[in-house]
Image 1 (tube, rainbow over the protein chains, first blue to last red):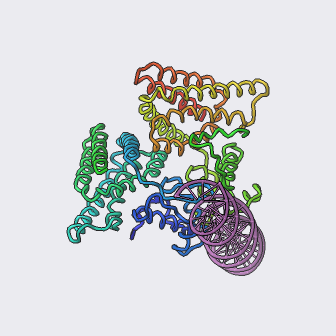
Image 2 (image 1 turned 45 degrees about the vertical axis):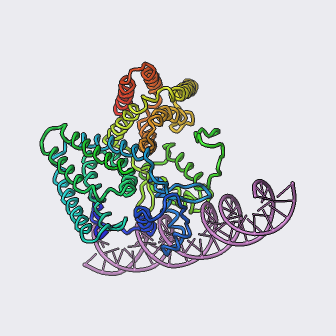
Image 3 (image 1 turned 90 degrees about the horizontal axis):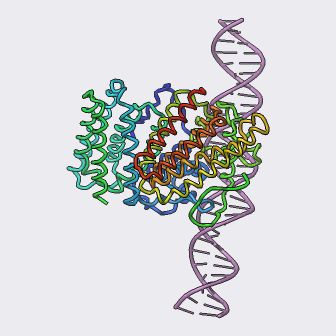
Amino acid sequence: MTTKPNARAAAGSVDRRALRDGVYDAVLEMLLDGTTPPGSSLSIDSLARELGVSPTPVREALVQMEHTGLVSRTALKGYRVAPPLGPEQMAELLDARTMLELAAVERAVPHTESFLPDLKIAHAEHVLSAHRVRRRQQQHGQPPKGYADLREYFNADWEFHLVIIRAARNRFLLQMAESLSAHVHRLRQSADLGVYDLDQAVAEHAEIIAAFESGDDLAPVEAMRSHLAGVAERSLEQA
Amino acid sequence: MTTKPNARAAAGSVDRRALRDGVYDAVLEMLLDGTTPPGSSLSIDSLARELGVSPTPVREALVQMEHTGLVSRTALKGYRVAPPLGPEQMAELLDARTMLELAAVERAVPHTESFLPDLKIAHAEHVLSAHRVRRRQQQHGQPPKGYADLREYFNADWEFHLVIIRAARNRFLLQMAESLSAHVHRLRQSADLGVYDLDQAVAEHAEIIAAFESGDDLAPVEAMRSHLAGVAERSLEQA
DNA sequence: TCCCGGAGAATCCTATAGGATATTGGCACC
DNA sequence: GGTGCCAATATCCTATAGGATTCTCCGGGA
């Protein structure tokens, strides 16, 4: 979290964020670390005390987080951490993601030239973070679950996919992808295969790039399909 | 708003709603009526005074509404009504919707038997509300934009599609559809063709039902594709 | 032993107050 | 006449207080 690669291509104006945005990020990190037991209740006041702020911004952050599905609200009762993804929900998530990303690839193909550099940069960062995780894994034994480098690796992986989805030039597709993003991250660390998945994921990403470069319009779709099938297989075998 | 057809199939327990939920509905209605000029600013305090509540629940309702895209927030500056959908965004919306709904139909086909009754019920309500709008249109001349019967017609139309999407048995697909719903409604009243669209929409819905009943696995997809193409054509010719 | 009811605590929800920030209008100055 | 600066206002954002609701626990009765 040293850098903020949030690509606001508009102006360089870094408009100040309100406190509730910071609380949102904090709670998000807390949830994605996997330390909070799923199903447990999230008390507004507890979070407020823990973060050293008043309940008001915490409430708003939770309202904003509700639509992601990471927390569920019951009126007058409070918020609870979303239960873990069962096998069915995992399959549904992978199915929905596949549908979305294949459609995105189809729409991105005509603009290959314009986004291919970005894709290569994202891939480079992915390779780099993978290398870092691998190194860390060899030095120390099994790292803790919510390791910072691992989180960064996840982000780089997802960013690779986001570049393609952005290239589809459809803000609603992008919106759908972002609404799925939290669940995808949760799935990855739920079945914590992420560590063993490194080489295959990188290789498959490379094949996707190669497919875009081939000039064949159908190749990228197939490459992405193959990649997501691999992700699905590796995810479900763990469960 | 005499009845609440919110189909919570779970239990009959009508858990009391908090005030902020009511405010959300009120603001939503206000926005979907088309009376609020797009791009204008939404003052928290003004809304609070207008609704007779304190700013606190209004703030939370707006936070919840932000992710729908109907309002846009700038930190420390406030909320604004989303600008109207330009031709490009309309095309993107229809494209995304088509992708989503075709995928949903594919996945719903195996469960045709179980949801076909619901679909017929939804269609009946659609026909009914269409009839009501047509009557009203013949009696009085051109009704005002945010007419109650028209709103109900829109809801019935969308509910028909939702039945199919629910039958796909993928909560993430459903989640995506709901995130699109507000924009679909806005598009309909933006290009206020809705009034002249009645017969064709009803007829195409009937063809979709017939396709599901035919037993041919591909027919429903084609029927839906044809319907959505018609919607797109009728929407874009208005703009 | 099991079930029921009520007191207390914890939590949520709304209202209000005050500090912080952005916007607007006017005035001096070039 | 145009431009920049400064005060005044409006608005947002956060903190705190109090009412309303739900949960917990414990004791009495069947």
